[in-house]
Length: 192
Image (cartoon, rainbow, N blue to C red):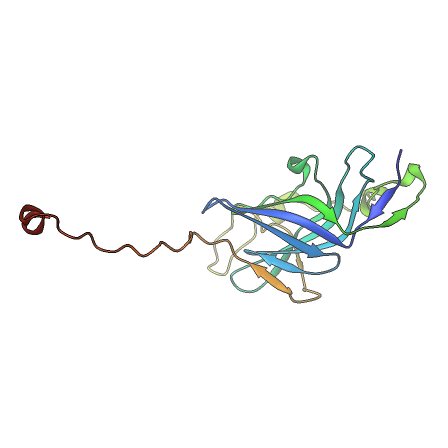
C-alpha cells in the first residue's frame, strides 16, 4: 500500500439545488471559504502517487450561517473523492463534494493500522451521558410554539472570516445585443 501525499489545496464542487448551478472552487488547507450559506474549512487533503489507485481524502469542517448570523457546525469529518455520496453534509439547499487535491509533493509515511481514524471515533461513549431525545426534539421558539425539529448542528463561533465567497446565481451569460430586424416589404413594415 502506498503512502499518502499531503496536498496544500483541496478542490471542491458545490451544487445549489434551487438554481441547479454547479460551482468548482479551490480552497487552501486551513482557509475558510463560503459557498452559499456554508463555510468550509479543509484541515488536511491527502492523495496517492499517480502510479497507485486513486484515493483522495480530505478532513473538512462545515458551518452553516443562519439568517440571524449564527453559526452551526453541521459537519466535521472525512470526505472521499471516489465516493462523494458517503459524506454526511445534509443541507436542504447546498451539496458540496471533494473532487481532488492539488500541489502536494510531501509523502507521509505512517503506520498502516492508524490510517484515517478520526479522534472522536476512537473514543468510546461513556454510559449514562446520552441526552434525552424528547427534550431536544421539543424546543420552544421565540413565539412560544414548540418546534417540530430541533436545529441541526452544534452552535459554534467562527475562528476566521471566509477569505472568498462563492454564491451560485441563476444568472446565465449576458445575451448578445440583437439589432432590430429591418422591414423587407411594405407588408412587413405594417403588420410586424
